[in-house]
Length: 201
Ligand code: TYD
Image 1 (cartoon, rainbow, N blue to C red):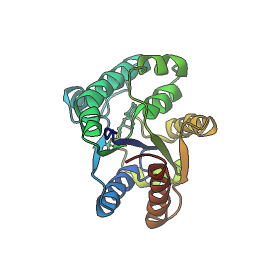
Image 2: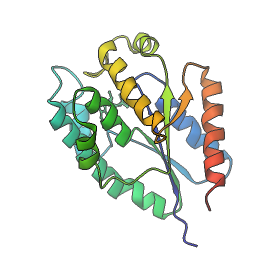
Image 3: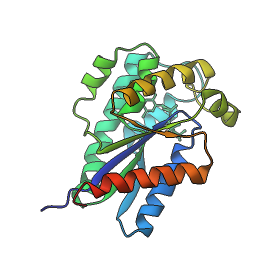
Image 4: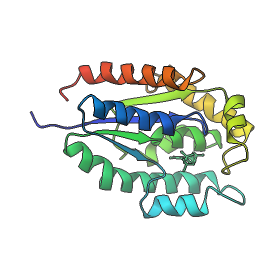
């Protein structure tokens, strides 16, 4: 059977430790002999760079519709140019943020979740989507001084609520992000190993 790889996304609030955890996961998988790669959204492609440069810092937020469309456009580029080619090589792709970030952040800004899903309907479905759940009050303390236009307590509280809806529906698997870095890493690793055991990879 052709190798197809395995697509994981790691989601969570700004400052929840997802970048650190996604990188730890990739290193642990490599040590186990898997071919794993780290990637992230906003991506390092042209649209991702545009988002980082013009949309996340300074000034006011763009309208949520514009944000959702830009993130979706970046996602298609990311999936087409990086994620799919790596999956076709049989790799485990770990994406630091994916479509649930759009649902959570642009959904928290008032956009209809059905519409966000629709503009993302061509985005590849992940095999495993992990939500690192950390208390918004705690992540806000870690984030000082403020980094981006998204990083205020009111937004983070709303974003968490949307993420939790997808935990309830079973689309996201929740990991307790209030534990130590090592404990969170352990929980994520065993979750991934259990999921991989159900596949041919
Ligand atoms: P973040 O992971 O914090 O990037 P960095 O490590 O470069 O700081 O992501 C940047 C911000 O973009 C974050 O606040 C969440 C937001 N975002 C959305 O609002 N929608 C999306 O679809 C994505 C991917 C990110």
